[in-house]
Image (cartoon, rainbow, N blue to C red; front, side, top):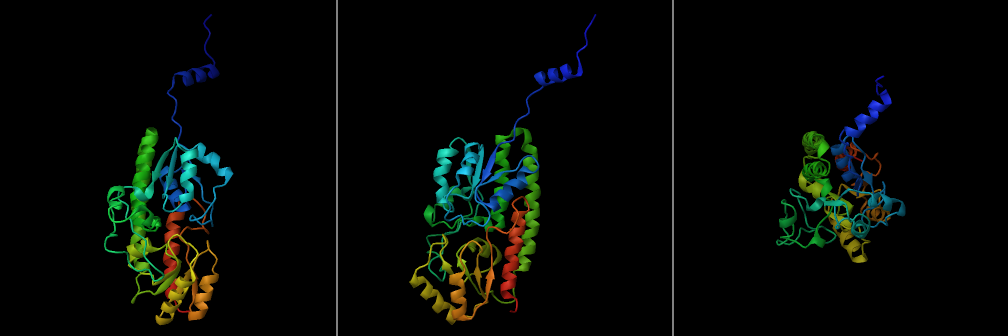
Length: 317
C-alpha cells in the first residue's frame, strides 16, 4: 500500500524546501517628521519606531529606558543628526552600534544653512555660504556645530531624503526594494505638488513681519521667500539672556510687526511679555507637528499647518 502524504505533511514539506522570506528591517527614527517620511517609504510593510515623543523638544531630551530596547533591536536608524539631538549620539553608539545609521542632514542633495546671528537674525558671514551638495561641501563654508539643524522644514530636503531612505532600505531589504522605490517616488511627486500650493499660500502683497520664539524656521523661510525679523531664543532653543531680550524689545518697538510666534514645546511667558510691551499678537507655530498623529500623513499636515500659521499671522485681529 502506498501512503499519500497528508495536507499537513505537504505543507511542512513545502516549508522545508521553499526559500525563507526575508524579514523587514527593524527601523527607528528620531523625530515625528522623519518618522513620517520613513513610514511613507515603508508603506504597509512595517511601522518604524519613534524615539522622541510628541510635544517634547529635540534640543534637550533624556532618552527613556523603555526606548533603549528599540535601539538595541534596530537594523536601521534614520535621524537628523547630532546638530539637532546631541543627547542621542551616545545611545546610538552604545545601543545601536551594529545598526546602519543614516544622518539625514549630511545626506547628498540636502540644503544646509548655517545659524543666523543675534536676536535680530543677521545673516551669517560671507564665509558661511549655503551648501546644497551634502556632506563634503556642507563643511566647506562652516563648522559642523554652526549648522542649523531644522532642515526637515524645507520640503526639497524631504524630497531628497525620501530617495535616500528608499535606497538605504532597498539595500538592507532587497526583496522589497521595488516597493520602497515606488513608494518614495509617489511621495516625492505628491510633495512637489504640495510645495506649489504652499508657495501660493504664503505669498503676501507685502512682506510678512514676524518674530519667532526660537530660530527654527530658516529652512521654511528660505524655501518660500519669508524672513523672520527676530528670535527670542537661538536655533538651539537656549534660554535667552537679558541682553538678547533687550535687543529684541528695542527692535520690536521700532518696527511694525504682524505677530510673535510661540511654540507648543516651550513656555510662552517670554513671548507674552514681549507682546505686551509692543502690543503684538501671539500666534502658535509648531515645527514638529506635536498635535498631529504620528504616521505617513504627518509631514504633509505639518507643512500645511505651518503655512496656515503664517497666513493667520497676517490676518486682521
